[in-house]
Every structure is written in structure tokens, then in C-alpha cells.
Image 1 (cartoon, rainbow, N blue to C red):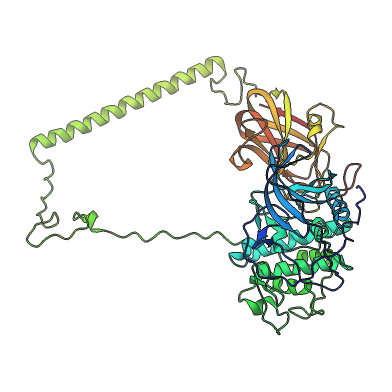
Image 2: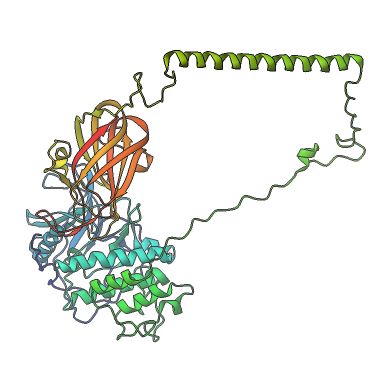
Length: 574
């Protein structure tokens, strides 16, 4: 892996003010938002090892419509504070929204911001909001990053109430694992506030502002791992209690009562999950005290991640089903249409009921019954005769020819079983609904008849399920509508958990979600050669090969060890 710079960690600190009360802001995807004319993620409480100084340089005076590098058009200023400004912009080349941080090139922290942005971009971990560009141009320094319009800030989520235990568990698990990976590459965040944590529409947690947010404000720490671990503990504490674990109010949350110190989450709010509450206390700086006073404190994201993994997994709540109301008889079914009858008026219920007609006991009735019986007997006799005649005729034909006229559905006229015919693949394209392909240029290697060439996925730390995406895969074009009944898939890595499914799609770039596609076949295997057979053939031109779980594989020339897979040979038949 490329060597990462640690310059993003060692930058100058800025404000050491205590956090002020803030209303929950509307979620955006920029590094900072605006609340009452100031940064939404606000200054964090001053900690040991942090220093503060100020940057007097004013933020650049730009306006909506200004274009950077003839590409990024500024649209809305969301923050203007401490000598820099943050904008929502439009990348006119790729036609997508982006976020931009701007500051003068002579700003005292401009060099640190550029170094932090470039170091963060090298990490390339999809659990972080990605830095797309970091440029010094025309006396300006600007950093371009992803904009996630479908994501919601933790600040806004907590404004509605504390998180359910499963959500809080996912939050601390995903954030601690991501920060552990960042620290292994020499990168710290130092501004892990509720506004820096986003939940996407798929339920995944993303972290924005890695190294950059701290560099923008000149924050540094002599113990960056401890600082980030304590920040994660504060996020978990807030998620469980809807309270900020310090005396001062911050990020729209009320602080703890003054003079009582740091108390366990279950003493703040009833019904808090005990294991998560103890985990929050172990991560926070509290002189070694924990909720149980037995477990050691967690001082690094790696230790916190291992502590989360050692906990019993918290399952999501069962969906609640509302029982339908009991069926109640109404007067409508009894003939009164739910209305009361005026006195003296006769209703349908009060009318005399006519007795049923007597059975047919007359001479005509008896004759009719005997006639119907005779017709039924004649019909049964005729049917029996025709059935016997058919059976005798078939027996005669079988005796003459020695063969039966019946053929199975899967045989041809000669009685031989039909084998599926191979289908020709005319093209393929990687399917990446999130806009982040794995290895798009090598897709053709999966159907070139060369088992030594392949298309590979990236290597992921979490697994075996693909947690940060819905899945990974390739759409194959068969040239025209074909009946697809089977597929042969060759894989590079063996091992348990490989889960692969075939879907029929409408194009090489499907618009709908995978859940809306017609499933052809699927399997979970530990082999490197998979055979998939459909229950019944599906007629389609485009077939998606979709991977949702991968085995653990060792490091190779392209990536480190982790959960990954590679497709070497794909064949369809029908």
C-alpha cells in the first residue's frame, strides 16, 4: 500500500472555547454546517495535549456562481468562519454535487490543510467521505470532497431522540473500525463530533473531515489515538442518552448536571443497554472508572473495536405488526343498515318469513327425479366405455411398436435429454450503483476464455458480508433475448462464505435496485468453481453476477489481506 503522510495529524490547534448550545441542524454533506451564524460542529471541549491559537486571515470573499478550475461552480456558502469558507458546489464536468473548503493561500494553516487533504485522499477507505481534489491556485487553497445528499447527520438524528440499541451498536462498531484503520495509516481525525458522522439511506455510517476538519481549525493533540477514542465514546454516550457527557451543552444536546462528574449512561436514562453503556464509559476519559469498574479503559480505536467485537451481537428489533381489529357484526348484515327504525314502522326483521317449498312429492316430481337419475347413469356408462376403449387402443399400439408415445418435457423427439446450449457474451460492464467501481477496466477478463486473467474486487476489512455496499458485480450482455437456465463461474479465491446470485436486468446500467430484479439462481460456496442452475429458464438479454459475501484471502500484488474475490471465467447456457 502507498505510504501515507502523518502531516495531517501534527497541525496547529485553534479555538479552545467550551462548546455552546446548538439546535440540531439540517443534515448536509459538507464538512461543516451553519447554526446561528457559526460552524455547526462547533469547537470541542479543550483536552489535555491540545493547544489553541487563532488565524486572523479573513475568509476569501467569493460569491455564488464563481468557478474554480473552470469546473467547480460555487452554489451555496454553508460556513464562513475562522478565515475559511465552506460551499456546496457543482462539478460541471461530472455533473454531480460536491463540497468545497476555501481559504487564502497565505493563511497560516493553508499548508497544513493541503497536507491533510492529500493524506486523507490516499487512504481511499469508503467508510470516510472521500477527498476528491486538493489544489493551490490563484492565491487560493481549496479542498473538494464528496457531497452525500441522501445522508443524515447524527446531530439531526439525536434531535429526535436517543438511538435504538442496535443502531448505537452499529454506530460504535463501524466508526471504531474505520478510525482504527485510519490510525494504522498514520491519520487522525481530532474533530469527531455528531456533525462529522453521517448515516446513509442504506443504514451505513460514514465519517467526514478525516484530518481536514482538524487542519482547518488548527487542532492538534499529543495523544491523537486517545483523543479520537474519547470522541467515539462521547458519540456513543450521546446516542444512548441524548445527553452530551460533559457539563457544557453542545451540538444541540444538554450537558450533564454540574458538579456530579461523568455518570454512567444508565443513571442518565432508564433502559440503556448495559453493555453499550459500559463501553462508552471505557472509551471516555474518566480516570480509569467504568460502569462495572472491572474492565480496563480503551485508549485506542483498535482496542475499542476489539471490545465491540467481543460483545454479544445486538440484533435489530423485530418488526412490529399491528393486529387487525376484531370482526364485529353490524346491524347492516341483519337488514337494518345500521339505522334505528322509527316506532310503528315494520322492519325487514319483523316481517313473517315464508316457509320453504315442500319437496317434490307429486307424480310429476317423482318422474323428474327418475329422469335425472337415468341421465346420470347413461353419462357414467358412456364415459366408462370411452375410457376403456382408449386404454385398449394404447395397449395395442404399444404391443405393435414396443415403444411408448409419452416423452418427458426435457427430452427431444429421439428420447434423448436436451443439454443446455452455451450462450455467447457480447459485452459486459461493472455494476456500481454508488458510483465507485472496483476494477472496471478488467471486466473483459471474465469472459476471454483465459482462466489466468480476472476481474478483482477491492480488499475489505469487514466481512465476510459486504457491509459498506449492497454488493459488487458485473452485468453481461448476451446480444439478444435468451433463455438463461445455468451458469458456470470461475473464482480466484476459495474459502467459506462466497455468496453469488444471478439476476435478470433491463440494461448494462440498470436503473432500479437489485431487489427489484428477477432472480435467476444463487448459491453460497467455498469452491473456486461454481455451477448455478435455475429452477426454470429466465428470458433476458442482460445478466447481473452479484457478489454479497466474500472469503478471507491473503495479500497479493494488488491489495492487502482481507475479504475479497476475483472472477476468472463466466459462461452462461440456456
